[in-house]
Length: 79
Image (cartoon, rainbow, N blue to C red; front, side, top):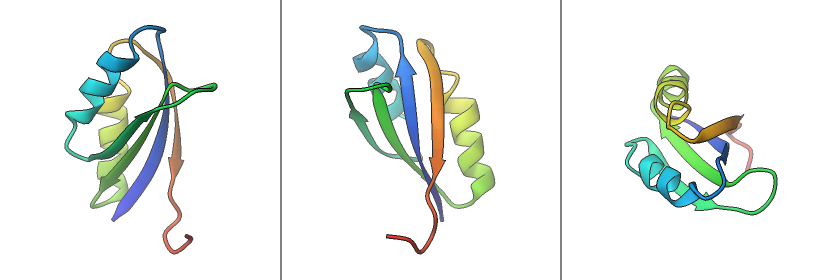
């Protein structure tokens, strides 16, 4: 199993609609709004790193009103 946290920066005022759209993606396990340089933190899990990358690049990053993302792959066995 591969997993990552994705930090999302979106247009101001569109956080709720972006969160709603992200929640509809099957591989998404958790979505939270946050304060700081990013607006949303997403936990994504997939059976392989290739599928994980596909979910992030073709589903999450293409959502309208997302300005940028930062992907933090989780290191297996730590934590």
